[in-house]
Length: 305
Image (cartoon, rainbow, N blue to C red; front, side, top):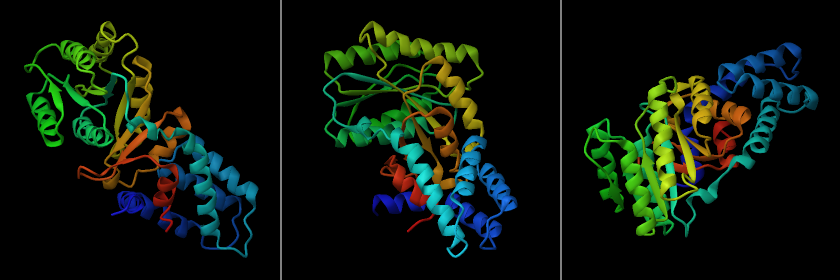
């Protein structure tokens, strides 16, 4: 299956909602002010966000779509142009390139976002690109998390730094940074415990994990990736906002897009935060983490063949 097909299949639920919504709204050729309001309301209800929806409405109004043309097709063209203009600068495909440095990559997110599985999939892509990769099991609260990361390390053939359940997560991060430097590991991925953004003590511990690596590699962590569960919808906005206050986020990965019609939330996040988008989780298989491509996202989201 090609990359576009994976995007299209992954966004099927979101694309169906968008296409069906437009068909219900635009039953006549002419798009008047009432129809513009309905389009804006529909986009907001599809999690595209208030700001982005208002901008799209303005663009459609300013274009004055020719009533002799297919209005839905013309709206899709406008939406695709808007999405690409917004998201092309947010692509970060070089994240997966081979590195000659000792990059420390902190992976964060709330409970159930799919961090550990995502780390395994990131690790595979990085290794396939000739990086020396290691995992660090900094989620020491759950024995199952350590075991899951260990399974991934065996599956793709990378080293894991771990400790016993209940040990200090920062000590694992420290050892991982030491090993990155001594063994010249290109990419070390730190798995952290799921934490709600409103739990102050857990967020302070998260900051400690990041800071302790600086004792070994002064400019680390080099990447701070927030993993987001697409099924959470608008709740994601608050997660990004709060995590970004603790340690500035350098990129996001959105998971579970294949299981929701709320794919529009990615547009809302892009509009509000302008954070780089690393990859999208479009399924459960090992190769279902797809490097973000704005054009393929736009086509899949709008069901453009």
